[in-house]
Each structure stands twice: as structure tokens, then as C-alpha cells.
Image (spheres, rainbow, N blue to C red):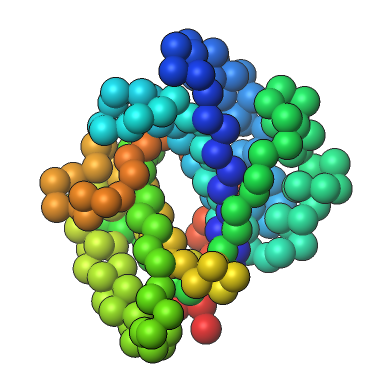
Length: 198
């Protein structure tokens, strides 16, 4: 499993209705995409849930790096983003674990993302073990749809991304960024291995 996200930060006075309409018109295109576990079409809106920015920031879980690469550079769909917004930096993380939550059958409306640096003097195995315990607990919470843990070995950073049926609930880490989910494409979500991926 590979996690991927790009962030398109928009002007402070940008009309986010434009993004909502874009997603409504185009999101179905990836509803049957080969190799795609899920794509969450997420936004942050300035002044909502503590967001300082307007941002379109789709998040993906791929079942393999080949499908991700084809999407980005093989004419597989990313060219629409480049044509509209230029070429954003694409962040990606190697998957550690993915869990279905009690609300897996619902359409998620919110998401949270927590990025955590792994201290240079910390034992990575211990840090990941702690993060996996937290992920297990989070996955069992009411309203959780899907939660995933991944890491970036270049910057030694952990990523935790969770989809929620309704709003991000109280008790989620206050450092986590909060998103509104406009649409979820999930053609092969049930094919991603449940639990730890190594």
C-alpha cells in the first residue's frame, strides 16, 4: 500500500464553490480506477475547523507503486490537475497498516490527517509500535470509516489519515488537520490488506 497526497493552496478569497463543482463534475472518473484503493476528494476552507487556508488536497491509497506511477506520469489522470493548477509537489508514504472502521459502509464526510516527525534519537520500531496501538484504538471508534498509517523514510515522518462518517470527533489529536470530504472513490478499498502491511 502507498499513500499519496498533493496540496493545492488557493487564495484567501478563493470561492471554494469552484472546487466543489469541479469535484461534482469529475470525481466519478476514478470510481473504477485499477489499482486504486481509495481517493478522498478533500478540502480545507479558510476559517472552518481551524484551517488558515483554502486548500484542495486529495488523498489516495494505492495498492501498488505501479498504479500510482501510471496515474502521475502515464497519462492516467493527473494531467487534469496539471492543466488547471500547474504541477504540485506530490507527497507519498509507504504503507504500514490500514483498518476498516465501524462506519466503513457509510459515505464519509470528514477526514483528519496527523503528520508526526520521528525524532532522530528515537528507535523507529518503538515509535511505529506506539503508532500502531493508537491506530488500532482509532479504528474502533464510532464513526471511523477507514484509517491508515504510513511513513516517509526520507524525512522520517509518520502519516495517519482517517476518514469519518460525520465530523471529526472530539478526542482526535488537536494537532491533526481537518478536512471536508466532497467525494470518495474506493474501487479496490476492500482489496487492500486489512491490518499491518508487513
